[in-house]
Amino acid sequence: MSSPHPADAAEPAGAGGEPEGGEAACWLDRVCPQCDAVADGPPPARCPRCGAESRG
Image (cartoon, rainbow, N blue to C red; front, side, top):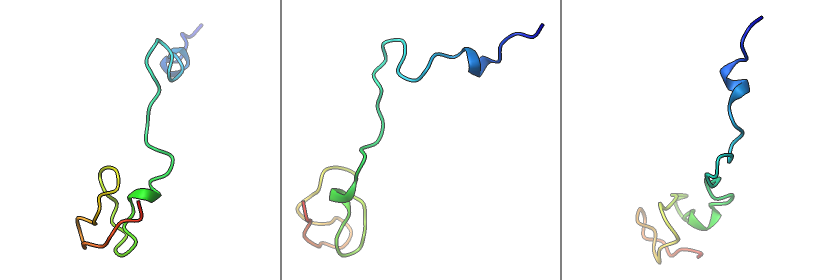
């Protein structure tokens, strides 16, 4: 008889008291309206790449 596959024996994501995390569902507020650059953080007043005003 074979032993269970390690992936089958693993705990599901988020189990063990660790909080589930990940990327935000929508990064639209971080996209520059002029050059489509994606900011690393919340929308700045101006795009760091082209200087356009943000929508944020």
